[in-house]
Length: 74
Image 1 (cartoon, rainbow, N blue to C red):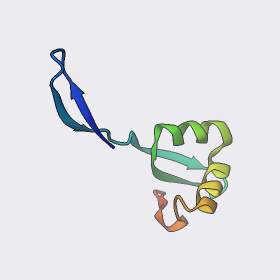
Image 2 (image 1 turned 90 degrees about the vertical axis):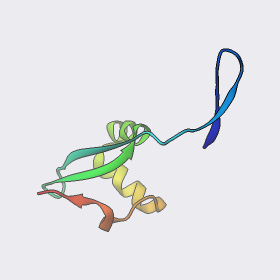
Image 3 (image 1 turned 180 degrees about the vertical axis):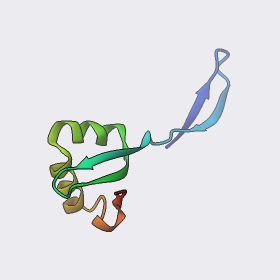
């Protein structure tokens, strides 16, 4: 998303609003391995609320990610 920085004197310069992404490791109990996901702060809250397995199944069903994109660490 693009917007403006507005100074105290009301001068406007262009800026961009980036997505708040994290690289986070999770232990996937159902598969017995560590996985690494790149997700937003809202995605992290969804995992805390629903659980990792339910959140991943819902994300794959809605087309947000694919099982091949999930990096298995060990």
